[in-house]
Length: 329
Image 1 (cartoon, rainbow, N blue to C red):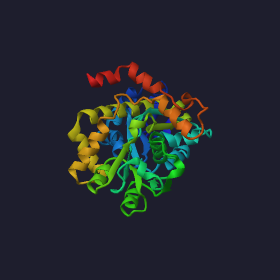
Image 2 (cartoon, rainbow, N blue to C red):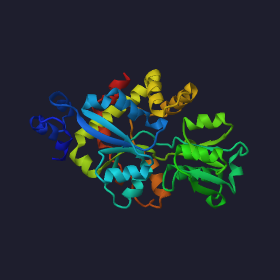
Image 3 (cartoon, rainbow, N blue to C red):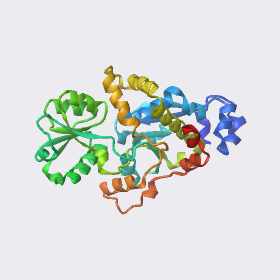
Image 4 (cartoon, rainbow, N blue to C red):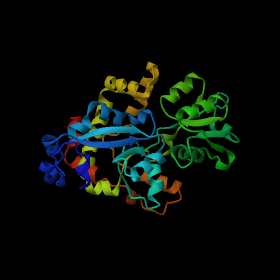
């Protein structure tokens, strides 16, 4: 059984029957928590629930001992999970769908953000979107949430994509440097970089979340993992839901964890990051199919059904058990 290799104690034989029945609570009582390796794509405020989950042990309380690994950008995370070196990844849904439409056996089991948590910022001399015609906009890479955000904004602004140039300049820090050095005229960022950009005199042209659903930060597993290790995934998701509740209800504790992972000393930047993301977190990380449909359309796979790529069965179980309701009582 694939699950067996994750245990660190020989007591597995005493609990394997219980595990087969999916009773993660019994596992907690009978043996050490299951080691569960999870990656996340990029260091930004939208990863806060996962960081809380690891730091405060909410997943471990449910039966999974998290090892979290940062792998920059969505595509490498998807490659890692398909290669079998991870059990789950928390990254952009668009990266998973790009692979899944080409028959990669992936499933989205939860979503923390059904709208892109991104804003488009520009150099001081560009004060409105129409001034972007003929300009260069920096993105991370093609095929991710950055270029999707730009396309959504251009559509809302009625600007033909041919009127601008998108330039892949790399991750968060690289994009900010490109904006500062005038290599690009605008770029896509989130908090805390937006706060820093404003202090430097940059303009915020748009909040991409205003332009509709576009599934972003999601929990993604292989179909084999979902079939064989449902109990572990369910335990992880319950830990995530409790972490989301903690973020929404414990600002001071959340700020402490943000400071640790973002490694930013500016108290106002950390506070702004918390406020930006905490208010956007749902109570239950359910995937909105409208956001999946919009991604599929953006990658020329609009004929495919959104339900092919999403499995909400574990979220359904957790809700029916009253887990979320008890947290918020």
